[in-house]
View 1 (cartoon, helix red, strand yellow):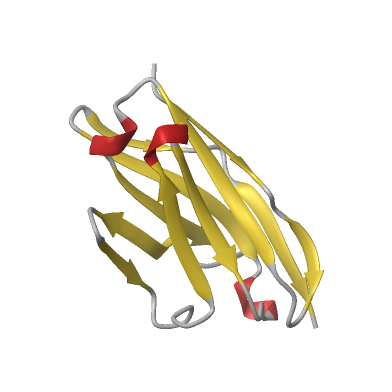
View 2: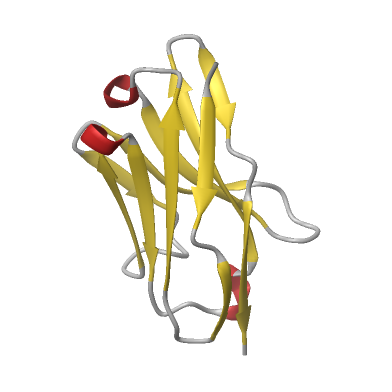
Length: 114
């Protein structure tokens, strides 16, 4: 059974930092394409960062501020978020694309106050 558990969300002031973590289980983590998405109130869920092998892509809105990293030995993918802005406020989701399909974490709230 695939499980993705996110942690590290919370509330910060504009310009602050947060680090999200997602631990995966029930699948071969090193073979998975791991991504972070977010969904802001009234908006569609959007891709924030996605990793395939050595390549990581970022949404234009977060380039230079957010960094995705993964530790396959710990089955963990992280999202370091710096210089946070109020428009980064959203529920953030970890997503794993594996051979058997795509799976979502439960989501974690990030709130950035101006």
